[in-house]
Image (cartoon, rainbow, N blue to C red; front, side):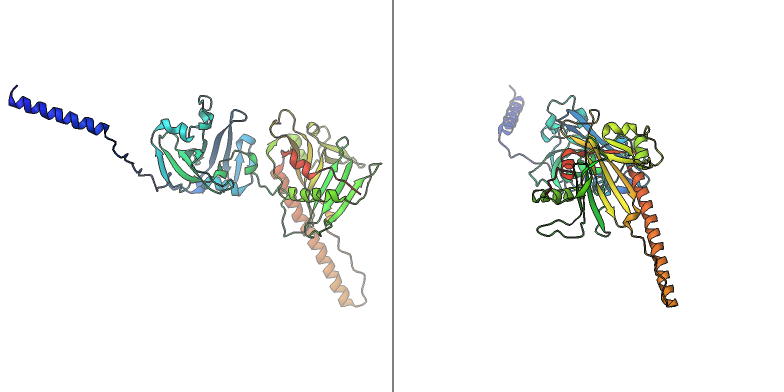
Length: 448
């Protein structure tokens, strides 16, 4: 072998040996710092440009994909999946539209799509072909008026343990179509697909600014026009240690007539729960956007016939005729609500348990129909003054009287406008009220 070839052979052997040593040597693992860390995951956007929201998640109980879609029309947000029900919870809508704004990347966990299962960021739409259902994430998509994505994200497993009611949580996430998995801090409440999150929880417009009374009337299920008991509570009067401020408390006697009653001590706690439940009542779904419910609410049954309202009867919402042949709305369970000193009355009539077509086995519920009316008797009519001997004093009293009459008239007019607006918002809808809430609102009470 020539000296040149011998030298080349030695060089090749040395290089091979060095390469082998480098391969088997336990070098320290190098970490690649992603350029995305510390940066927002999406370009800055104006929340007002969001015109469509879609949230998708897999429900392991039903084995199906649950979806909520909201679209903005003018100043309102509608839920197309609920026959364009108007979403009234502005606070929740703001949470959702802002949830992907300035979402900072805290850490990059992987740049391999094969790791998506580990971090639970697989698109929930792939639930039928994904064996490990726990790997399915929650997908949120925000779109503009042209249906172009502003930002979309698949939110996966928690990155660490956090408080159950924490406003933000560290979660693993991925952007659809990209292999990277990041860790971010996100608001978990913005990811719900439950209906009640989109509805204003203060259904009865309770306020401390206007005097009001809460009322509860439990009906006889066989004859809903007959009551088992009736009570009203004044929330402005603080309860004493041994009594609740009940302005009305009556129970039915053997003839079915309401007579004054005294509440047993054992039922004091039940009444206190009724009052708290009304202030925090929530509904879980909506049904029956039809002509009958439109007439029952928007028209208050004034021009409707019994036949036109017949479809409500199987749901426990009925109209019965009084002595003047006027249709009176009743619910098989009774009614609850608030009566304001402005004459406005907001009532929920509680009907039967949800029928098979609407019900879910996991959460038994009752139908509820919301209705606003005006009761003129809630505003006392001013008393016309008697003639005074002094002409100036008589003129002064007359002016005060006329002013009081005018103010009463204007208050009632304003209340009718409020009632009409309320009914227009709720017209056509029956709500699903949890059975437990109905039981708390209209329990079986004991009387002395």
